[in-house]
Image (tube, rainbow, N blue to C red):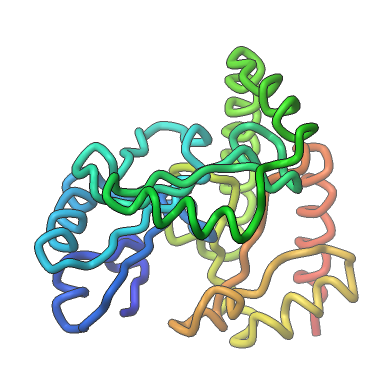
Length: 240
């Protein structure tokens, strides 16, 4: 199942009808594109999976870090979906691996059995840290900061590469580099080696023309990114 700019990087029911699957997992907002599944499309996907006994898994880890649009939860359309979320993104707690999964009621005991064999519970320190994370005034400030970074980097990189779409959420830009290279891994390494600019090669995210893309994260402040853009422009201008 290939998704691209043409379908706004979203799967649709017609994409599923061609395949026999037992489970479907989507991410909204998504990594690496930052796109959000539209309400009607998300509802149709959930209903299709329910009708055809396909487990629907919704990765909602970037919920909260959304800008102009609203990210809908799959739970709004059915209680029989799996929803994954956690503290690492919106709540600014990367690395602590603290999160949760919501499962259909009839599978809750099976989920408990699996969890009990993987771990007893999250570390006490992580749980106390999570209690302090519910500072919504600070979280609103963080979201606004990411929005400013997105707007800055989108404008700058869209002049250098081609950005398929302005991200609705998360903190990534999916940049088409085809005017400079058709090998995202080699190009990412070239930028790292020559101007110490870090990006993620598109090939890390599948095989559908991902050799033509780099993912850039706007997790650093604008002052830091300005230096990266300056190096990038200068290097590409003089690139052999």
